[in-house]
Image 1 (cartoon, rainbow, N blue to C red):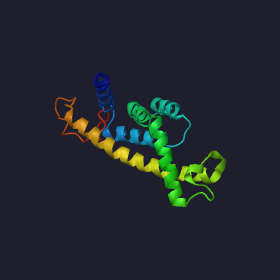
Image 2: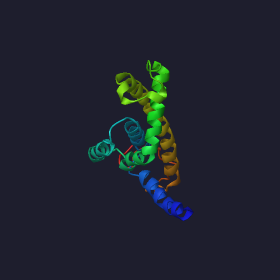
Image 3: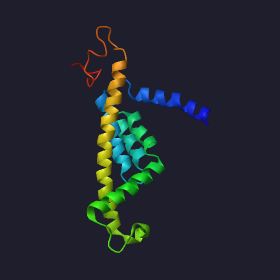
Image 4: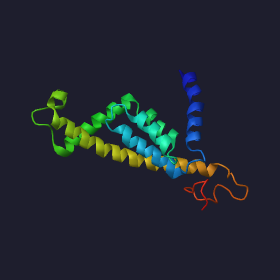
Length: 169
């Protein structure tokens, strides 16, 4: 099992390095990841991959790898935990569904449960997106500082972390 995990590490590392590549600024990578987190955390019935493909095709500044990374982070067990936390948060904010305990929650409870789920999910997705943006921005900036500059006249530290390498300042 350890060998299997050890063989995955280089692929994950190279994927992260490509996501933090110089063709996107740290802000673009972090914003792409945050958008992906928000959308994937919502109950979107599996439409995230199609939306991310469209965004990656039409939005030049979007980091495709950062968008796809959110699909890896929010795998099915994580999504179920997010949905459970969302319902708890919605019920905590709006009160419990009258006549229903947590053990009795089912789709037959209808609109009351759906509304609490969506309220909690929206708040939780926004919080996760902000946290994801902050963490990804710091990681991307750290990665950009460690990379040597492409231009012989400057160093990675001399340019702004959020300056696009292909756009003159």
